[in-house]
Image (cartoon, rainbow, N blue to C red; front, side, top):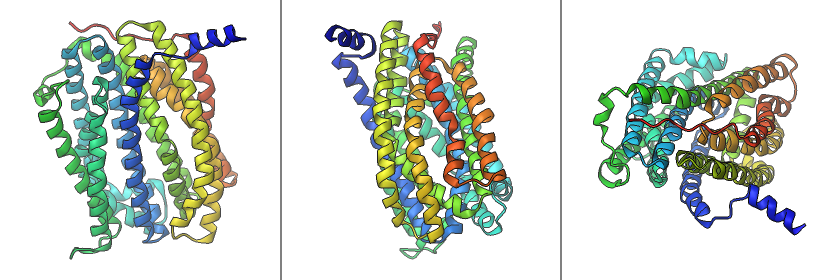
Amino acid sequence: MEETKSGFLERYWVRDKRFYHKVLLILIPVVLQAIINQGVNMMDTIMVGKLGEAVISASSLANQFYNIFTILCMGISAAGLVLASQYYGAGDMKTVRRVFDLIMQVVIIGGAAFAVVTILFPTQIMSVFTNEADVIEQGAGYLRVTALIYLPHGISLVLSNVARSVGNAKLGLYVSITSFLVNIGANYVFIFGKLGMPALGLVGAAVGTLIARVVEFAFCAIYLLKVEKELKYRPSGILKLPSKLLFSEFRRLGMPAIISDTLLALAGSAISIILGHMGKEIVSAYAIVTVVDRMATVAIQGVSSASSVVIGQTVGQGEFQRAQKEGWTFLFLSIMIGIFAGLLVLFVGEWSIGLYEIAPGTVQITVSMMQASAIIVFFQAVQSALSKGILRGGGDTKFLMIADIIFQWVASIPLGALAGLVLGLNPSIVLICLRIDFIIKSVWLVFRLKSGKWIHKAKKID
């Protein structure tokens, strides 16, 4: 029995203290950053919640469109992390800086495109998500201000995320602390009209966010240019085209991550469209559930980020067998965190509903959706560690892209639309249907990990 246990640990569990030290250096700042970010989201929702259910719905649905850009930036970050981590592991800092230049070019083009579309079509964007006139009007005003946020937020988000590839996870934490302090204060002033300012309501929330994003962009730029010593990044490379080989590797290992996360964003928007057409009470309930869900999964964000960076560096060093063992270790950590997250949603979620001023009928819907979320969050933790961390760090981005296309768009979205818009099932059942891809991928990707076929090393750039 002892030999069996020892053999299991030797094959599936990393016992090197240096490994856990490296993981914690990334995980702790990422978790703290996620807690702060979700704290900001929760405070925003509570503040906006004082203005009524229509405003909560408008804020939630308008942010779904902005979330498409945010998740696109996460995809760009993931593409940069895959390449930068592997080249950093191989000791090629020159190519790491070239990767930073390339992802900056991509995010600037993407941010400008989103800004133009949002400025020109705010009402049409809101009409995609809901047909309730008061919600559309409120959300359109909010979107007009958010058009100015894309570029500063996108640049600071991508830079702070990809900085983790060289072991700098603190930048994102510092940026989030700055954003938290500025955002809470500015929202309070502009939503409710304090310190002599007019009460702008939902538009005030957008103004507060804009101010916070500009400040965090300035902080990020100053930190990278004046404080950071490992990367020594300079933005002059943004004006230079990438080499053919680097662009080829970006297309091979990085582009599938961008496509995958873009599909994730579109799937999130499709979910909002389905729920939005089920009524603003359900949208309000989902907005509250989402806040709790995100707070409960902050630890798995840390594990996913740490596993992507650590495994990417290990693959870059050519240590494939060690990368396999590290993958199993991260998987077991995600299972433990998933169990804890589900219990947290179950016991804390219902208590949090009392923080919002919503109708009794909306409270009942929120409770049932919170209970469904407690089940979903476990599988969310497992599949996130595998798809956004372990396998992605190993360069298996094309396989993950295919899995996302199949399970999101062939299973989750059609099943959720059928349950919610055709059959009119209970919102909790609809929510499980809309997240059925989490359950499927949790099982599917374990077999991929076991196969060992997920490791793809980036080619050396001359």
